[in-house]
Image (tube, rainbow, N blue to C red; front, top):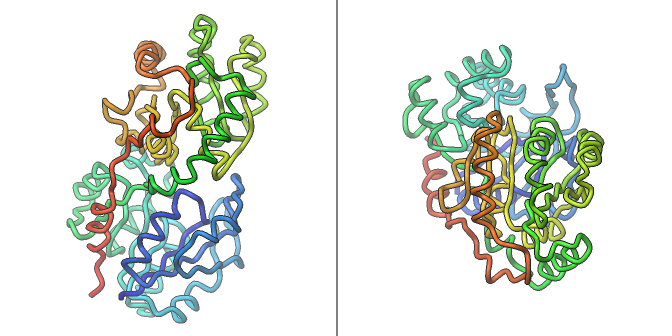
Length: 374
């Protein structure tokens, strides 16, 4: 079995299935650069207990503006002796790996995970990232990207070959998320009682409450609809810098009984929110992927999704509606259609909300077997 070494920022729940699947194809070690996500702390002990592969941490180093370099990368490579090495994005870590190979200190096939969606590919936000991309792509053996659309971008712009691009979106295992259905249903029922959700159309958002999610814009666009529709409510699950401003908007628009901010959840307590909701919303104006769309679909929710989210390609006509978050008229018109497609919350029964995601295991295996090892 070939040995694969991955350098990754931090362990997050929506990466576990992908990493565990890779451990069935390769002798895998993942090296985490941070102990936790800086602005979204997860229960790492619970996450680490689910891993089926070797892992380690590199935590000593320095920051330069908003970028980090860790000591011990070369030492880790010498210890593990991998056949393939993967960095992340166009980070200092990836640049250092490229340097090591250019100096002849490592000889392994070298790639990087790129989480950009097609919008970000076409409109790079900073000159430093633009030049880092220009430099890196020419020197990496392969890239792991999120969609066929992004893969086509790199094929066309950088003349990459088919075997230099692996399409591997962040998708989770439906069976894993939906197990323990009795416990999930009990938690969901408790939310329904606490927030008086029964008999209402419940729109759910899950994620950080930050400007990129455009939640203030979302509320300001749709608040007349919430006031008109007696049984329409919005639940914003998460926390972040925008929480206070969202509380102010909620009060100013007289939506205290229509918009709820219950806080941040993870694990089963988070998954239960999907069960007691009617539909999912993701109004982001900047969203490289958006793993929550995959989660919502797994729990049988149709999705009202910004066209700018990378995961928007998961939302086919049968699974929801895409819209332009910068067009108020389009947003309102499409929201009215979306509301006609979703049901009121009543009895919590997972069997009545089957997963809307197909099994991507065969696609995943096919793509990752393209990794160059010779």
